[in-house]
Image (cartoon, rainbow, N blue to C red):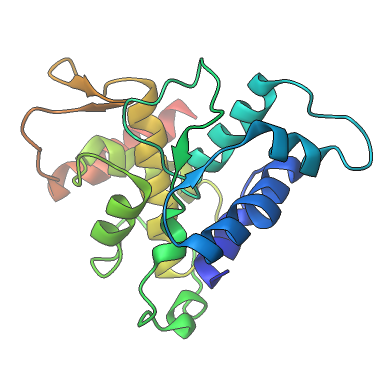
Length: 215
């Protein structure tokens, strides 16, 4: 397991989701290095060795949704989480992080976010592709909302990579829930614009102030 996966597992996840990834999915991926076919029976056996806490397929699906939201697993875009995931295939995108990434870069330069923060150009596109963000672009409103939220939490310090990872995961979660404007259409589970928009830096500060006032 690489350092990027470890950092993702430290995010807000249930212990069952962490066990599912670390002890079920990751060993299978290491052996096969390809898509993993989910077997609910094997998952239930692993998670219920001491006491029965996970008993239904729906509970297993919820664990996979948790992992998907932090970018640890990726399904086909047409996956239906209202149905059983038994025999469905899943990928582990963060396990595919290029080996030439310097691990020191992931730990150095911890700092709080600033109003002029921008995602790292070294990692943004790569992370979007790995975790399945369809539209690899972002708008001033998406950036402003992210900056405003973390400006209110100055005790949080992260490396440039970690901030970029948080931003990419927020983009994915945001676009899975609601469109950011009326011109968007849904592709798979995500809302996207027919033509990718540009980030207008001059609007970001105004939007940060707007979101900050709402808090």
